Length: 254
Image 1 (cartoon, one colour):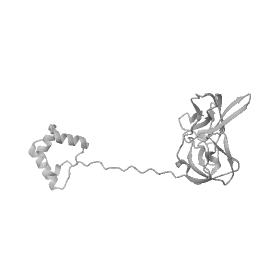
Image 2 (cartoon, helix red, strand yellow):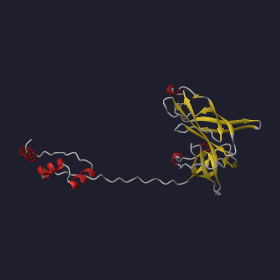
Image 3 (cartoon, one colour):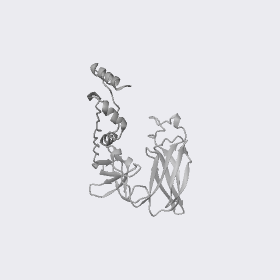
Image 4 (tube, helix red, strand yellow):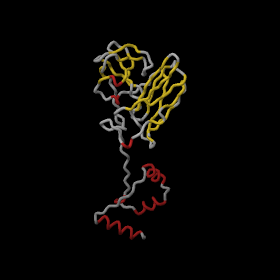
């Protein structure tokens, strides 16, 4: 197309009030091209441009990162009598003392898995208490996670064959010997993962077995009836692990 024809078309567009939209390349590319003037296509456009064709480059808007909410420890109360305050999160750890219904505690953190809360008593002593034995209106999902020290961990995950995590599945972690039976328990969280915290002084072979499932699990409806799409059970029903290197277990709900 001849130069005179292009100028005529542009003049008509201006007179009729039409506008031309020019796709804007990245800011870095435009700046580099204009500074070097090495592109022949840009040079040709500059020779025939009019004020109406001026290329407008808009810098991206700055975004402000939302401020993080600071956690403030809050007061809660013990739900029933004779609740153990333990040295670490798990039934195999020693009890420091027993609390009774209505006793006041301050929640400081929670263990991975959301089953145990790290709390402080009015006298300043601290320990771990089972989450479901605490009464509070506070959203416990906002409580920061604190990984306990001086523990071993037996963990695993439960999911469907399609990969959907199953929450609320309780496992019993048991070791039987001539001196008796040791048992710990853990329940899967919303990601389908259970975490059993074990003392450092235990070792040997342990059996991890499916024990129960909560009515709050996604496999149930509001009346605690199993939904048709989740009809099934945990497979395998149990697996063996050896401490101190248990690995990570996998169970399928089918």
